[in-house]
Length: 333
Ligand SMILES: NC(=O)c1ccc[n+]([C@@H]2O[C@H](COP(=O)([O-])OP(=O)(O)OC[C@H]3O[C@@H](n4cnc5c(N)ncnc54)[C@H](O)[C@@H]3O)[C@@H](O)[C@H]2O)c1
Image 1 (spheres, rainbow, N blue to C red):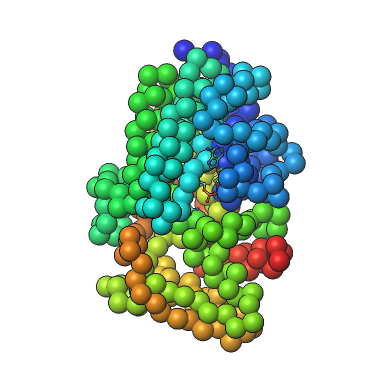
Image 2 (image 1 turned 90 degrees about the horizontal axis):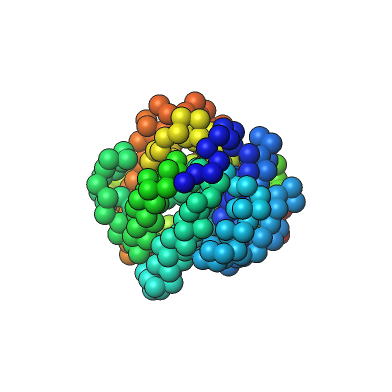
């Protein structure tokens, strides 16, 4: 039963993975909207530097059911945004158990902590990596067949959340992010984790070197320029989506599964060229062998998202995204 059903406003939000890249941006957005924000993070890939001082931070694992339950009770948490996960595709292939334990069992424990509590909304960060290869533009009804262990753990977690939320009368918002990039214009937060296997991060840190080499995996894919294609979305636009969806599912008391992307494909080579353009150094773009498990191209149909909320992206522009990455990278050096 939901003890807080009379309380109509989203006030107290707990963000798991709040010391991470996306979590810190969602925190910044929610604080601007005057929400009280509580962060749970075990700092496995998160950073103290990214913890917003206006939020209350708990160094805790999501699997610590009792610890989480105590926070929910004490601070009357009405909404949870669950971002904590392991997310490096290559690592997941080598360590499937680690990924299953954190992303699936961790989510299960977190859901159990919400049982008979004040929580009435639950937002989950899923991924484009759950979709079957070869579909190009995907809608939420497209075929699901994750290639990677990471993708498999995310679809399992989605199903757990749906079942649990239905039984416990919690509204859920499952957000299937496409490729997140960029850094906040506030200049205070961005991607730190060097092991992140993240294209924009790798290019940003390479561009800081004397003789930058931007490496592209695969030049012979059947795409417009031979490199892979992705739907890159700026992290501040994704953060705004969290706020809008949270308010809307709370207001309408409904649940949604939504793709989050710009509905636009950009090739890896185009990204490399933009970094080259914005650098004053002699930048080399190098093609190497394809990587195993990379999807060739995938783009979000964001029709459902746009029909559900009034979302106007502010950073839907490759040059702006790259610029924000470079400014952030300079700052953390
Ligand atoms: N970055 C992307 O392009 C992208 C794309 C699709 C989906 N996602 C999803 O978004 C979410 C956030 O990703 P991110 O890019 O901010 O990564 P991140 O590594 O910066 O953030 C994840 C955070 O979760 C924390 N964490 C991990 N396991 C935990 C646990 N058991 N208990 C408590 N804290 C834990 C980490 O310390 C870290 O701060 C993830 O769920 C990821 O799968 C990210």
